[in-house]
Length: 165
Length: 165
DNA sequence: ATTGAAACTATGCACTC
DNA sequence: GAGTGCATAGTTTCAAT
Image 1 (cartoon, rainbow over the protein chains, first blue to last red):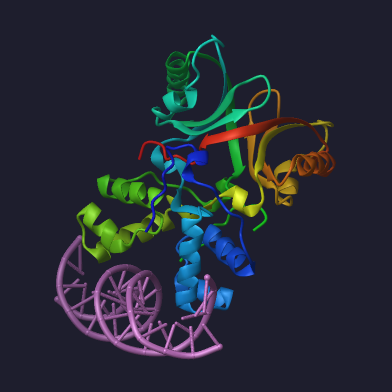
Image 2 (cartoon, helix red, strand yellow):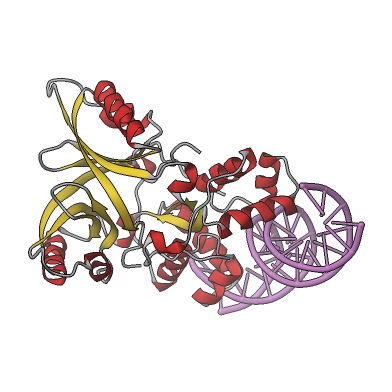
């Protein structure tokens, strides 16, 4: 059973071919909402035998369409009730820029995107408290030599909804 | 097997109690990185019998610590290679504000956060093309009666990393 | 929490189309 | 290549301890 490898850039995880037919779409849609669906459940939904379904799912995994399986954990249960976006821009633009790698060291950084516009990167971070956010911002500034702009998240209405499948 | 229910606000999904001991932490950490880990695998890691492990996992699910299980699908495979943050603020502040609900109708909206600062909400959206992004922005403006500020995501370095467990 | 039995699920292989 | 069916190994479930 394949594990997620979330510390490497998405791009290095290999090319992803698109879904090939309705069976693939059905399997992906089901697994996206129930990552522990059994092959028999998937097989019934797809109208295929269990073996054929297994082969399909394996192919989706190997092609990188399915990147892994994860339990969705409530951040509050982990003691991380405070989330924020932190937009960062380099203080010294003439410096080698490996901010994403540097910032991956910090556990609080859940996501890192490079973006168009005023800022270079946007991070999604989760911390236990306002005090911890202050510390984190300080760390980010020194680790990556950047200026930061922080936007505190007040409420998460939804997250990780699956688009189209 | 529990299904995710991502269309309802996180807050309405019930209170989440924190993790209680190291066994819980081990189980959560494992399931967060491998959502399809078997009870025997989890049992070995936690140093418990399979049945005790099953009971633990069920409790974690019932307490809302584990909110569900999902396959991690590459958005490109779904034909959604373009992602963006869209920050929105109301055009008419004297109007009832149910933007998150209204915007949940749009499949392209993957996440919706209310935020502190200039803007009211930040959305994470995924679309097939720049043209589709233009259409989406138009839809968001009319559906929610808002002004938008869009930040295109150029690269996703990492996403959904688990913090602390 | 553990054991253990029964039901269900995953896997590989022989076979068909 | 892509599917089915079947035998076996492994997993999940639940009652009893």
